[in-house]
Image (cartoon, rainbow, N blue to C red; front, side, top):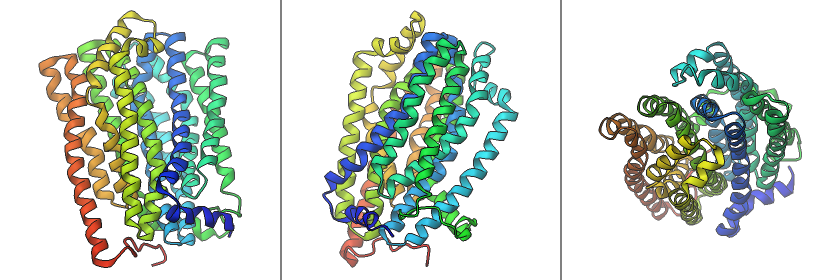
Length: 468
């Protein structure tokens, strides 16, 4: 085993928490921002080069993309959390077994869902709220983006594994490579070649394939702790390994899956109360807010290996310091985004479209929907805390609290009384309710951990191993 790899992992339990969080989070944040550029670049070029109807059509594809992301996150997040804990417990063979099972599981799931999408794409898009005007744009984008979705799952999943095994900077660089390709190809295909919305999809396909190739190459090097081996047993599906991946990955996966079905309700409500323009405004709102959310997710990706490793090693003090630092940083990020959304909404909308009606509706959306956005950072970081501790049930519940338990009833009730504004109001009200629940659950978990330390010291808070 590479001694340099061992040193990198040991730093997770003895180096300054602040320095570690910065070193692991910065590449992850940059990587997530780079990945966000895929969507932002596509939507800006499509909005400016194709038109408002194309933006609305693209918004219809969000649920499908979220469903694809949910299946990828199920394995990427669940596998990386398990790998972190196992590396902290020095169970390197168990970590490699998770890697091999994740590869097989991801391939099978991706082939299944992409086949279903290809066969029933028109029915799916119509069910998700496409109108006669927006369906052709949505269909064009989806038919060409399907190969890229397969590559995206591999790039994201194994990028997570690369980061938690001690290579945060390399994980960032692999995302940069793909984003650079997309920045060059998207305008070329959309404007120069005149391919319109399908040009954006093809550019994304190529760029994600490049990222996936660079990421996967890393795991074929036997000099790293975490790598693909010649022992076929690591690739044989193991019910216990797959169960542990799915149990932990279910929470972030359900967030994306819930977003898929929430988008169906949102799109139908928007179309009923405001037509295709309202759907387009929601698309811009989602794109803008996801930029901040992705920064927080990147921060959580940097936090997760530190918390997972120290939980596995039984170091509670370092775990809590990491969590609170991440909460502070995440809150600062979303608050900055909220301030911009409330003070310069016109400029944000204008970056995506020149259509006056769409700009006006987007401004209205941003100024209402972002009134409680400052609490989102705390929610996302806290959900990741439970995921990192292997607390699947709590993580799933918190994931669903904001996007299902509170938001769905609000989306059904508020528009009846406030019309289109009621749709926009549902987001901040849901955020506030979910935050109250999150505060209670985090307090209970931290109290439990404190009692565990007092009862048995800092050793073996989480004595987990796949060998047992």
